[in-house]
Every structure is written in structure tokens, then in C-alpha cells.
Length: 121
Image (cartoon, rainbow, N blue to C red; front, side):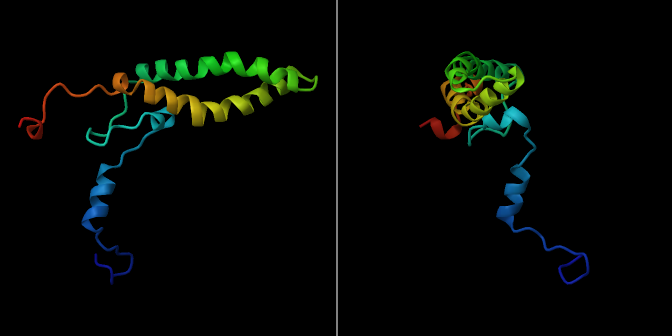
């Protein structure tokens, strides 16, 4: 079909086609572990993501409740936990996980052992 035909679509420009071909579905926590630009787009193994996620979340779960609890009025335990989670979730999303992925980036995505042709003077 061509653009002039009903229901037809124009072919994608080469740059857009290349971009679309490079895209893949990533889900959940994989979005915190971006692949290096030079590497094929594949996330680290899930067990590594779980360890890094644990190291990021554990300190928040230990530190935030004692800091937030004195500020909360007396009430049901479920409400107190909900309010504490309102602090933990953004801290995890925008501080702890990005920091942890940066700290562990060499372990999550180790550099390839083989030298590329451009590296060989």
C-alpha cells in the first residue's frame, strides 16, 4: 500500500526505522538497569537486579519508618505503613535505585573481554 491508498502508511524514514528496530520491551525494574550505548540492549540477569534492588531498598526500609513515625498522628497501623511507603517509594525510585545501579554498573554490565578492532592501534 502507499500513502495515497486508504489505510496505507508511508514507510518509516531510515533513522526512525533503525530506532524502532533497536527498541525492545523492558518491564518493571529492568528500566533501572539501562544497557550501555555500545552494548546490545539486554538487561542484566534478574538475580543481579534482585541483589542491587535489595541493597537499595533495605536501608530505606530500616531508616525511613523510625524517622517518619514520630511525625505521624496515632492511628491504625495500616495507615502508618501507607504514609511511610509514600516516603519510601519516591526515595527508592529517584534516589536509591539510580544510585545503586550507578555504584554497581561494572558488576551489572561487565565490559567485554574482547577488544574491538578500533581499540587495536
